[in-house]
Every structure is written in C-alpha cells, then in structure tokens.
Length: 239
Length: 240
Image (cartoon, rainbow over all chains, first blue to last red; front, side, top):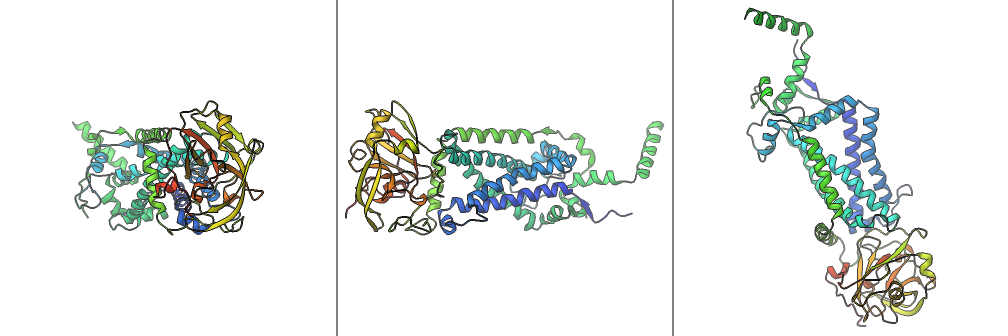
C-alpha cells in the first residue's frame, strides 16, 4: 500500500496555540503602531472601541497573547506541546551546520538534513517566545507605572527601551516568517501544515528528511516489522 | 525524487546532540532583564529612533485633540495623553535636594499659591490672551524640598513618558510669574491641557509649558527637552 500523499505535521492543539498567539501578535503590532507613531495617534484621536481606548485594547490583547497559549497548554494536547519543547531544546550537528551556513534559504546548495523543525524554525520560535515574555513583563511595568505613580519608576525607562526594541525585532522576524511560510516558493508548502495540519510528503522528505524517515519507520505495519525482526534475529543467530 | 541531501538514518547515531534551546531562551530573558535594569546605554538609541519616527506626519502639529476645553488653545501632544487619577497621582520632587518630596494633588492645592494673568503664545504663531494661571511657584517647591546651591537647573518630566522641559535656576525658574500651574481660568486643567499640572513660563513660548508634569528634578545638568532635541531653542523667549 503506497504512503498517503500528505503527512501530519501539526496537531489541533499546536495549530490552535499558533493562531491564537499569531493573531494576537498582529493585532498588538497594529494597536502598537497607533500608540507609537504620533501621526497615527493623531489620526485615532479620541477613538474608542466599545468604550475602550487603543491602549486598553492593546493591554487586553497582551493578555490573549500569553494567556491564550497558556490555556492551550492547560486544556489541549500537552503531550504534543511537550514534544515541541523537546524538539526546540535539542540541537544536533545538522542543526548547527544549518545555522552556520549563510543565506541558507537563498542559496541552492543542499542543506544538512533537518527534523520536523529546521534549525531556523527552532531559533525563530525561541526568539519569539522569549520576546513574548519580554513584551508582557515590560508592558506590565509601563502600564502599572502609569497608573500608580512611583511604582517601579526605576524600571519604566528601561521597559520602554526593551519594549520598543522588541517591537522592531519581532516585526522583522515575523515578516521573515510570513514570507517563508506563505510566499517563498520552496518553503510555502509548509503553510498547509498550520491549517489542515498536513503537508506534502515528498516536499517534507526533501526539507525535513529526518522527521519523515522516523514517521515512516513508525508507520510500517506491525506484521512487517516483526517479519524484519525475525529475519534480523536469524541472521545474528547464524553468526 | 531523490533529495539533495542524502539522509541515512544510521547517521543519527553519529550526531552529537545538545540541549541548547532552553539555554538560549533563558539567556535571552537574562539579557532582557539586564536591559530593563540599566537604561543608560539603550535610551539614546531608542529616543533617537522615536525622534526620527516623529518626523513622519504633519510638520506643524503632531496630535490635535478633538476638543479645546479652554477656547483658543490648539492641543499638541507627542505621545498618548496620560490618565489622571486624583487619588494615586503624585508629584515627585528630587535630585539635588535635602528632602525628596512626594506630593498628592490635594497637597499641591494646599500649598501657598501664586496667580498670574498673562498671554499664552505658541511658537507657531497663535495667541490666547489673558490666561489666568494659578499654581505653586518653583521658589515654594525649592524651599520645601531644600534645594541645594549646587542645583543650577530644574528639569520637568511629563507622565506621558516622552516630554520634558527645563529651566535655569534661579534666573528663569524663580521669575515672579513662573509656576507649576493646576488651574487655568479658575478651573482645574482639562485632561488634554495637561491635567493635573503643567509648567507655566509666561515669558516663553508655549512649548515650555510642559503638560502632565509629575516629576521635578533639581540638577546641575540641563535635560534637553523634546522640542529642543528637534531644533527649537532652549531659552524660548517670546519676541512679540
């Protein structure tokens, strides 16, 4: 029986967490622009959305930005998420080679074989994850300091700095992420993985060979596997 | 279709694996925490970016509020208008002083006050004549806080987190008509007009009248204010 044309890459929980976080981020970036650029805040003027100021909305979205993923962790498939964390944590030689070769995406040279997440994706996730923490902490410090004068006043300037810098960095990272996921020809087949959960198997065999090989080894019917084991056992016995 | 990279599953056993991801993550959090705690290096960079960003948009005015609470004024801001909560708002007075102060709105209203009637002139040309300002003179604050002789400037900081202004001490700050004002034409300042407190310097142009002032520092260094960083003069005496 031939293998199906697609292979499952992301579970419902993983996709749900991704989209909750991603949509929150984009809305935070949008409201953030209206808070940061004087020309835009002039345009907004006294605009209220359901009696909330743009700042109120921004802070509320901040809650979804980290609270959302937290809910997915508590209520969703934790096993899948723990596997994600493990894969992000463990880097092998191929990952390091992948990262140290410059302009990997733009060159046509073959890449070192990668797993379900390539090293670039691992770095991106770690950077955006750390940035999320950074945003929320600095955001809370600024928000509370403006409501309770004197509270954490020492941290306000530093928080403004880090929040601003993180906004620039993450905007650039996410722009690159969206480009690779949705536009760049050799990588955009990955996008279906975040919608249906499945990606083209042959594409994945090319770009994430270590993952596909492991999945296909697991997919082998049990009978076939035991047959292989029996032959292998006979061979060693004969030695 | 043969993949470009020839992958043999046995190769995996030869690969050295390391738990790096969590270390990078925690390292980044550490760098972030350090950056929050030590703003001195990053602040000039961040302010520089903000200033160039502010150049985008209309040259003359940056943010006009929808309503002018006192007729005749145009409202300009450079950051979102801060909220004023009378119960928790404090004016902090610090720097080169013997006693740092933290005054509530109520405290301010009960200090010896000063009143002047002067024209308000914006550097862009418009004038609001006969503004009745009431507030606390800087002499009073200096006396209360025990300002030291080494202080040659007073720097004023807005709770919008962006705007600041400064005056020379004593030549500018102790002029008889200079104050931190909380009433305009007999009424508390409107939110858009700097509630609850703004610097009032009738000899100078309106951009010296920093709004939403909640921090005052006596210093031997002059903090160059928002508009001065954008090319406007520090000693903004009216010429008309």
